[in-house]
Image 1 (cartoon, rainbow, N blue to C red):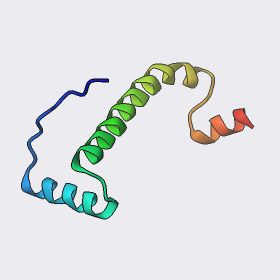
Image 2 (cartoon, helix red, strand yellow; image 1 turned 60 degrees about the vertical axis):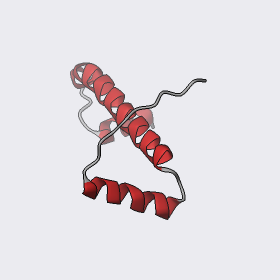
Image 3 (cartoon, one colour; image 1 turned 30 degrees about the vertical axis):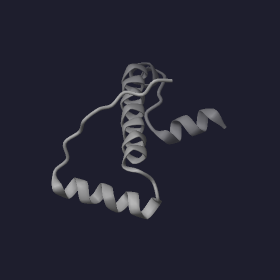
Length: 73
């Protein structure tokens, strides 16, 4: 699979935080940034899906996590 190169500009504080995470985890900048991007994009997809199903859930009386757990148990 071919990789794409992307240039990202970081302010000095964010760059230092990135380098701290890299040192602490033994991972490269690219690995940390790819993981962070995957997580952010997954979160966005989850939030979009949740927004779409929320009206249906509320119509069935599902308002909280506890409501979901009660239905699932």
